[in-house]
Image (cartoon, chains in turn brown, blue):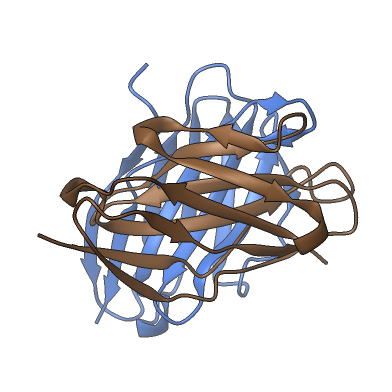
Length: 115
Length: 115
């Protein structure tokens, strides 16, 4: 069965500091990986996705993520955080083998940005 | 495109009442998903449809929950009778199959409170 672990429930960073949110997945085949962001009272918005190819993927709002198969990880990064980045971030996994039709989400990481 | 449209945005009802949540997916998307989000359980997939046909309803918690998709432009999630433990945010998402996976676009959610 596919699963996602986001080990950090809450993270606080100062505005302008760099950010890394961790995501580890379990999947029996080549995974398709996603990061979504949810602002308060809003739905989830896709930040970026990895299907194949270059393991470093660029997304919206200056975010990037790196797929590391050996570590089963897909960590999200941003070099300089803005106050507007405060939100909840969800990692998700899906794929062709039995799970391509649906995504499994992690429990989320709540990001707080200190001014 | 207006995105995925959900209604109502907020619903407060009393235990035992029937609740109907509605969703209009993005035109041209052939998959529709219903998720439930709670603090305790995170994001849970309830059911999804492909071309208006229910494919997997294994996440529907019990017989009190039912979902329909009478056409490509409309879906409902019904809870009858409602219970306080059904209080949650219910998200609808739609997608089009892409390279072996679904890239979901979420609606803003329907926040349900059952008293």
